[in-house]
Image (cartoon, rainbow, N blue to C red; front, side):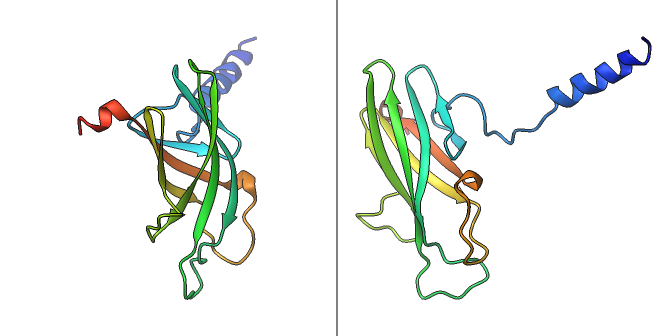
Length: 146
């Protein structure tokens, strides 16, 4: 019996100290949120789901490319009180382009994609399950206060 107590303590500590790198939990407004492929972040008003990386033409880190490329990410926004679901897409690109925006405004929220990891290292296709997007969601009434 005395041998089980230390074993239980080690098990409890290992579970409670597990590092999830900020990838789980609620959607934090006005903060950078990390979201994995097929994960949904939510708060009392909205939820955002990372549906897929529809294309990733970013130039691999170990290559010389004529164009830096971009990545197109598909998301779904659900507004809880209105029972409204809005699919949208954002781009990760170093070039600002009218058709490839890294942010959008839907209802009272501005949603911006900041980064997409991992960055390609070679021409090998990255599995969807490996992708993590960094997004920021701002409530529009707080946008005017900045």
